[in-house]
Length: 309
Length: 296
Image (cartoon, rainbow over all chains, first blue to last red; front, side, top):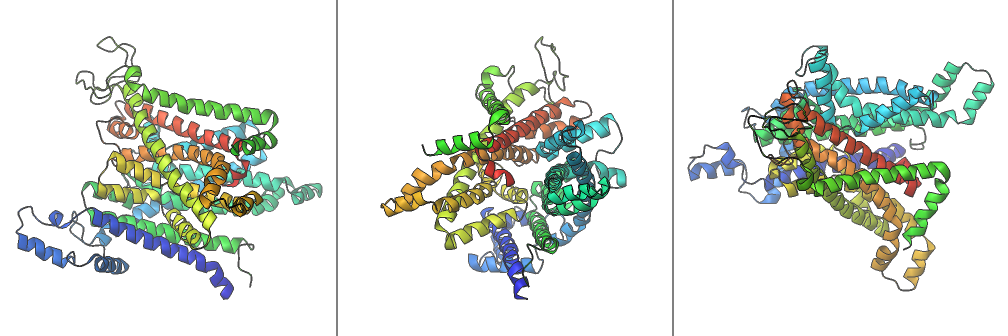
């Protein structure tokens, strides 16, 4: 039990500090933005009305008290009311969450399914034209800005070739281009890491032994190599899953995908700060929880990371 | 002074021979690209064939051509307001490089300072700084950037600070590790024993020893900063129109993709090329100057 705590403790602490930081930054930024009351009331509201709303929102109290109230409200899931939608910010954001999860998961699965075989093949056929082309594409994929990649895809596959719709959500065809755009960076990174991890293992003595024993080549590749190369591949895959959330903001905007990233951007234009806060906060929490889960999986996979019993 | 032998050492011993010379040539070519971009940005008023903000209703959405209605070339076409795309790309390089370099300087100063402090002081200072670094890495920075800019309002200084602070963690982490190793070396002990102050040890001995590392990280960070600036400008949170920026141009051309593909595509290709070349240059410099960083 002590061992488990020793392993989990620092990671849990880090996750909690991150959540606290997000809460504090959201609070500070909100204070910096000035008085929200004029946004909530008609421009000709009397002073008594302004004072009433200020008291109602607790803005007349000292800052530390406001900070604690704010943190307590967030813990209860209360982010205030949306100015634009006229309902609690949390329920607005919840309505858009499904689309983001759908897009993120598809992009992730697509990236992993394409990238691992390509990386493996590149390593086995090292320094062949196939390897050079695959790794060249991966380099470009890593350097390409997500939003421009999306626009290129729309130009080539929607407008010129008319294979997929330019945006929106609906049938599976709508999902293809956004998922490819969002997954491109992850795909490129996973392919490159897979290649170098497999190359590393192929140099090992036990691979030479296996081959010397006359084990079939595909068994050497799948059983001896891939299993031992799994760890770095799982790590980079997990890390990339986390970064997908950030990319979702851009991808959703480019493809008019009705998720929380696009909602956040539109709410900024609408000056609907409660919704922006709620969307940013929930995304950050999702990201932190996800990374925490990945750390745990990593511990399960690698006996060396696991605490000694 | 003391940095020079270390740099030469690693370059000669680790990547000697043909491979090393090839990497050196590539890194040099990459640096030449950055310098060229800088010259283009600085000399924009003399190089740009047209005024980047001058509108022309008659010349709207013009295809790339060698001879437009006024008899002059519009090599990359005109946009929805009749402005010359090539000229706007040239002026856009100013924004990309200014924000990119300023952000790298801010991130580098903050990150290097905190990283060296953490590695040198250890203890509480170290714990606090590294926990902050971990926490910042624990969520996608673009969300934070969007939140901050949304409230403070988009402006040049806000953009530079936000993009700059997004990058301090990489410097801090790597420098901390290097300083911890350096600190235990005998020469540092000798200087302290001879009565040298901490500031002297850091400025005269630690900083020169980690300078090549800083150069490598700064190059990689420059590519990231340029892309982040373009992304924020694309989302309407960066440089505001009519100032030409690559991200902003890509955004404006979005609605005309079907009829005038060149408005978005050309600045996008330039951005992609810049990002690719600068980040590859960082990789080559790393192989050349500091092969120990490869795992990062």
